[in-house]
Amino acid sequence: MLDVLQESKLYFTARLKDCQRTPHLHTEQIKVLSEYLKIIAASTSADDYRQKLGQMVTMFPVARAELVDKYFNFMRLYEKLGIPDKLKAAKDRYDTACSAKNHGDLVNLMGTAQVNAAQVEASGNQKLNHAVTLIQCVVAYMTEIDAEKNDRLGGILGAYTELLKLDPTFTWASYEKTPYSYVVFFDKERMARLGEVFNKVRQ
Image (cartoon, rainbow, N blue to C red; front, side):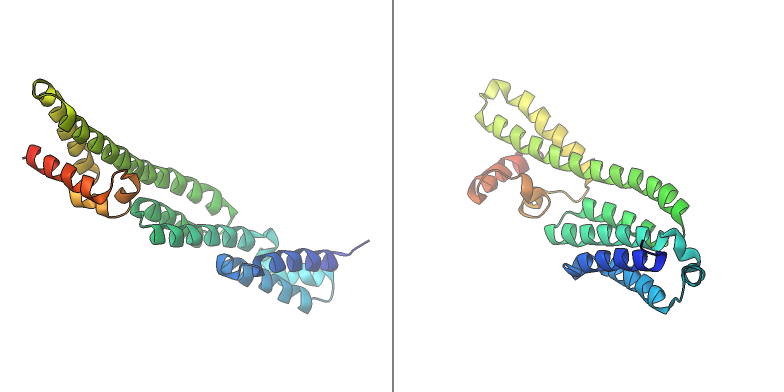
């Protein structure tokens, strides 16, 4: 039967080896797992091991490291993709994980952070939805007969107004940049023509 020291060594060694396969994704976990292995190597018995662990016996450092790595990786991803709302949401979660001092913090603070982050993400999704609607409304306006154009004009102005509430910096040129470029389904020439119509009717 394995003793506590041997069981712990096998566990942390396996976890560390797994993390080291992709070290850039597991920076904090590698640090923490290595620290546990150092304590194991310096321990002479199970009791000595428990004493040297101190508060680390709760495995809180491992739990926090997992979340810190997770949300740091999300931050890096959304920064590369150019999605500011999701980047902010990931950073809020990352900062909260970094500030946690115990398991209670991870549960309570992360719970609040998850709610706040979800609201930020929802706002980002709404912006993209309104951006799609705006394109569709401009297309519809261009294809309607004159008698129906006023109805379509209302749709354009409505979608544009909602977009400005969520993103005061929005212009038609925003479609050339992320995250708005992800919802564009026309080529550049077609978008330029739609933009001319939009800029004319919104004045």
